[in-house]
Length: 154
Image 1 (cartoon, one colour):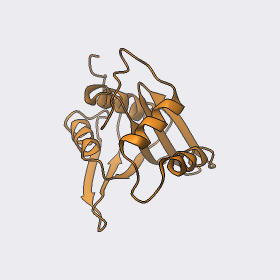
Image 2 (cartoon, rainbow, N blue to C red; image 1 turned 60 degrees about the horizontal axis):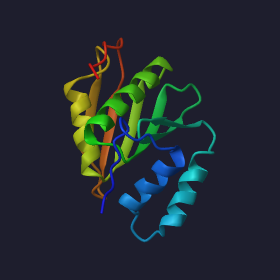
Image 3 (cartoon, helix red, strand yellow; image 1 turned 180 degrees about the horizontal axis):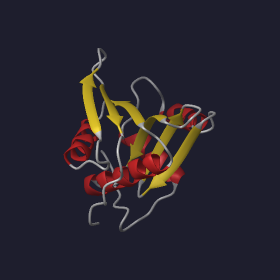
């Protein structure tokens, strides 16, 4: 059973979000404790940032110049909040100089959120491509070109 926690009502800590996200979507063939330990280790890799927006944790790997980011999200927030959390995450990436973003996932809810970003871009020249990989996952590539557009009403 998937547990979602509305961050507007109950804000959780990063360890709580990671743990619940793993139990909501356990990786096939990997015990939950091993997946949690791998995520913790991933967060300590060079050029990696772990940030929390609402009840979503974003893990981002940057190249040296920080203009390319490869990221993923661990989410237990509501769908609406996840989209708002993602918008703030992408705005912070742009403010930090990121020009290109790549993610790969198999959760259909993430594809829905990215389509929402595509319908309401955050930069004046933002472009997005979504492709299916041979393994059946979805890969999204985003060019975060142009200037930031004023945010949505929350």
